[in-house]
Structure formats: structure tokens, C-alpha cells
Length: 377
Image 1 (cartoon, rainbow, N blue to C red):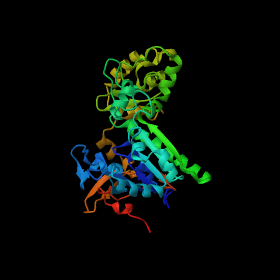
Image 2 (image 1 turned 30 degrees about the horizontal axis):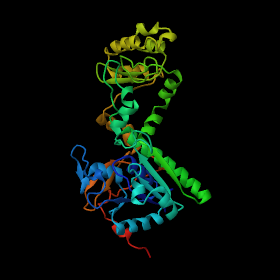
Image 3 (image 1 turned 120 degrees about the horizontal axis):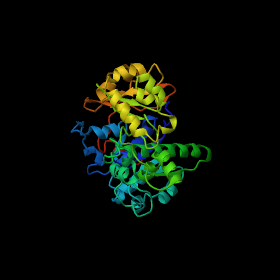
Image 4 (image 1 turned 180 degrees about the vertical axis):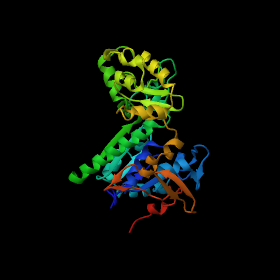
């Protein structure tokens, strides 16, 4: 039996942060029911990446909502709202990502539903928290990366800010919301009472930067400088970064510069004193970059790995998937639509009792389970 088997989760959210939280709960055994508007449902149903549809919706929608069920309800319709409230009254968890105040106006705010169901875990994700001048800004990942300083961390000193190439704050906010829900479920098991968990994309972005922000908050003053060469971390000394070689790119993590120089046969690095590894990091990295251009990534790895120096090739997806290590993980699964069409997706990364968790059921068609809103015997 999966850990959350027997629990009912109502997912009022759309796009990525809230649905990714609900997806993880579904992977762990919960019965997740999406509550969607009848006209179009979750907006992610129509959000196609690379023009890749599946079944009746986007493949992206299935990636985030596989294994769930769907009821269609107009929350502004009094009859539909009453039927939804009856579902809330017997649920264990409610997840939403409406802007602050909207659930209250609908009659589904925390105060109202906690009276309806005192055991309910009520979980919300917003863009910028419940108050402040950014409260009603669009809670979108790229905007949050930009506002919070995350985009500024990447890229070399003379280049433009570089955002992460994926919806970083959305997915991490979903993970943090799941942590809050699980903690409240544990508390409910001992006290019998529900509770409320809230996260925001902007607070998630702050937490993601805790290492660097903690240094800056205690030193103050100007922003730290990105490396001009192979920038990968504001506060780490050379050689930390990614370097081009004669064939392929090579990532080198923290290691003694003098040992690295001896291992690679680079005399310019062997003589650099330890107290200059940060202060002179651009000059050190430039010398290393020029030296690595004389061989392939595979050649340099054959020297670095036996020496215990942390290094790795920089894979693209075909290179990653072709490595035997990828297959050993069994990281993908297939889902099947009601019509028998299949789609390959990633699986839950958690193993329970040593077992890989997989669910081959596709995301629900809009309103496929609306019968759940009817009175229960």
C-alpha cells in the first residue's frame, strides 16, 4: 500500500506549481481530483510545448496531471458550488493557486472550509504572498526569476542575465507545498485537526538562493561579481565552472588548483598560491580554458577521475539517455489514453520500500469524473 492511499485531494490549481504538488501526492497514493471550469478546464490543457498534443490535450498537461481524475464545475454557479462544497466536506486536502482573496470571494476560503471540514488540509500557492505591493502581479516563473535575482546569478560577468532553462520556482514551490501538506497530515494524525499551508513563488525564489543571500545579507554593500570566465557560482573560487575542450564541454567542481594543474600538466596552475584561488579566479580560469582546448573532454576525464578530481562531461539529452547509467535508473514510464495512444513521460523520483512508483493512467479528460459531485450514498 502506498503511503497516501485512502486520502482524497482536491486540486483546484492550474498550470504548474499547484498541479505538480498534487501530482506528487498522487504518485504517493492519494486520489487526486481536479476541480476544473467546464469551459476549457485547466489552462495548461491548451498549453502545447513544441506543438506536441496527446489524447485531447497538450502532452505537457499529461506530464503534470497523469493519474488524476477530473470534475467540471462552475464555481460561480450556486448549484455547482454547493456540490463542490459537499466534495470538500469529505476531502483530506485542498490545493489551489488562485490569487489572494479569490477563494474567499468564491466562498471557499480557509475560514469557510475549515468550518465545513475541520480535518481538511488547506494548501495554497501564490505568486508573491498574501500582502504587499506585488500581491496582484502575475505569478509567472520567468518574472519571478527576474524579480528575485535568480536570473542575474547565471552568465559571465560581461553577459546578460540568464534565467534557468526550466520553470524552476514553479516546480520548487510545488515541492515545498507538498512538504507543508505532509507535515500537516502528520500533525492531523496526532491531533485530529486540519491546518493551512501557504507558499509563494517569490518566497521559494528567496529560499533557493539561501546560500548566496545569506552571505550578501551579512556583508551588505554592492552585488558580488560574476566570473568573467566560466561563471558558475558567485562565491566559489577557481576552477569551478564549465569549459570548452577540443571536443565537448567539461564541468570541473571544487578542487585544489595546484593539484588540478599537476594532474592536467598545466604549469600555470601549479604555482598559484591558495590565497589567490578566489581573488585571481578569472586569470586561473582563463589559463585552464586555454589548456583544456588542447584535448577532448574524454581525454581530460581519463586523467581527472582517477585522481579523484570532481569532473563530468556536459551532456545533452541524447548523450545523457545513451549512457547506461540512465537505463539503470528506469526513469521513464508510459501512460495510455482511453483510446490506447501512448506517451512516454518521466516518473516519480521517490522510491517507497525500495519500489519505483509509476502510474500508467493518462491525465483525465475534462469532466470525466463529474459524477463524483452527485450525492454519495
